[in-house]
Amino acid sequence: MNCLNKQISSKFESCMGISQSRHDILYQLYQVNEMSQTALQKEVKIDGAAITRHLKQLEATGMITRRKDPDDNRFTLVSLSDPGRQQIIASQAEKARFVTLMLKDFNETERKELTEMLIRIQNNISEV
Image (cartoon, rainbow, N blue to C red; front, top):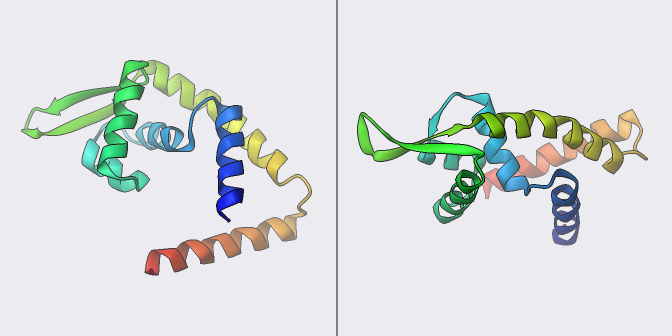
């Protein structure tokens, strides 16, 4: 499974031009107007150091903006910039193409079964 994960991640990043983690961050921010860095970290399920590192790099490339919460300076609010919004919109078609190519030899029944098995694995992992 580890080998498959590495291969998928590498191909995904090469097709998308962005890592899966950063894509997940941008997509989550696309779903909401703005959210705290802590809430974002919990949603995308990565550790605190990783979210800080990703956000710093995404901010440096103009994909996101960060600001202190005016109601509580201990929190940082994160939002998608206009270039970040354009990036995530454009990437959705590429992501769909990537998934289609990845599953090209699977019929509809096999795709459904695979999805069900992956959900079961995900649920089992959540219980560990």
